[in-house]
Image (cartoon, rainbow, N blue to C red; front, side):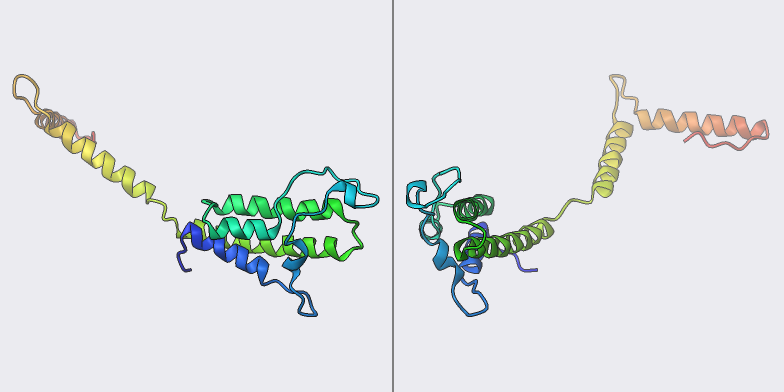
Amino acid sequence: GEKYSEQDTIKILLITVQNSRDLTGRKLWLTVKDPPPSPKEIEGYSGTGKKTLGLMAISLKVDKKEYSLLDVLFSDLCNLFHSYCDTFPAHTSNYKDAVMLHRVSVTKYMELSQERRNSFRYPNAPEALRNLLKDIMKRLLSYKDDNGLCLGDCLQHVVVTLETANKEEGKTRRVF
């Protein structure tokens, strides 16, 4: 996959939403370009009346690079679509357009998020641990005490002594 900057992924998500059309070719984003109307303007409204941005305001924020994270843009889009679904009855085109745009944005967001996760290279933990342990052992075995004795030399002497003792007894056992 290609590697995109955070600003690129933000623009890609917005453009995907803005380019969405229904079967007749009508641009769906035009339905949600403004925030949903206030509760006083809608007969039979039962929603929360929470303040949300319309798609035009979100688009301006993207142009001004006010979104630094894809997740924040996605959150604003979800709030917008939820507000429309909360404001209008399910049989209206406003509701249906908002649901369709929500589905499009979720799908594209998941695709962009997956690409980001795939582009991150995790370190090879077993190899890094093996190298760390080798380095620690090298340093430990070459360490000299106050008398100038090296721990590696002392251990080597112990191993040779034990191997010699074991061979004399007829046992072959490696200590290390």
